[in-house]
Length: 369
Ligand SMILES: Cc1ncc(COP(=O)(O)O)c(C=O)c1O
Image 1 (cartoon, rainbow, N blue to C red):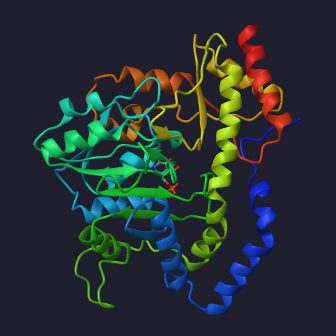
Image 2: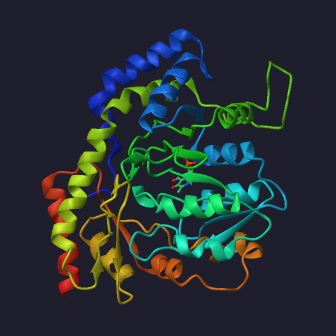
């Protein structure tokens, strides 16, 4: 039996008729960029994120760019973000001419360590950019408190965490901006590229909307320099078909994670992810730590048995060649350890019981050897 990391066909094919209806509707409408399909989806998705405003954009990466541009981040500014995250978190800062300043992570939940932030604040710091990694909220309360003390903006990178909660509230609109990705591997995945910016602040929403469309208002009058970060009507229409199923997709992932937790909890050399009781972890990834330098051996063991796994992420950002100019030679021990020990297992909602049994048994068997 082969177990893939993700099987999008199992999620999308049961909705094929509705997806084709949505496609047909968009073809017949003749409106392919922004427009009513996008506006409808923005409203529904923003509601889901507990936000007053949602701005549909072309990807999670562009959502970050739009949010940072709307905050006026630019050359000479610094933005504090985790090092153990996907590249786009920090590249969006650097692409605007600002400097990403890398903070270390929490060894249990893998998110930015709130205690690591304040010592990194300088007079150039403009914002903090926590990431809700793998679908679990970062510890926002101390992050928001430090931001308030120093007058900094907070952008939540919720690319992997649409629907996640922190102390009973959806993530995204707890800071100034939240940014979401609908890349197909996410809990809510488009059939292409798509993203969303959310905020509760009407002035910031207005700026983000301007930035998404060349800073243009009215047409061909440019108030500021933005870009083309617009969402396609087709992706909005397809996402609208899948949005009502998001809770069920997430519940399936949570069930699988719960099962893994029960099997792998006491297994020597394997550290399952810690889920904080005050957060609703949506399990975009189920990521274990494999101790004693055995991560790559476990990955080979799984591969030989037809079980896919992935390393998110093998190199922390402060060690990436492109970010070396931004980061002095100091080390971030937790981020570095996570890069050597993290392994993500298949956890998609549509996995069969036999598949998840097979994955858990193969990990346990490896650990016992
Ligand atoms: C933490 C994080 N930020 C940003 C992004 C960028 O999103 P996209 O791939 O939609 O551009 C991703 C994508 O996986 C991500 O995981």
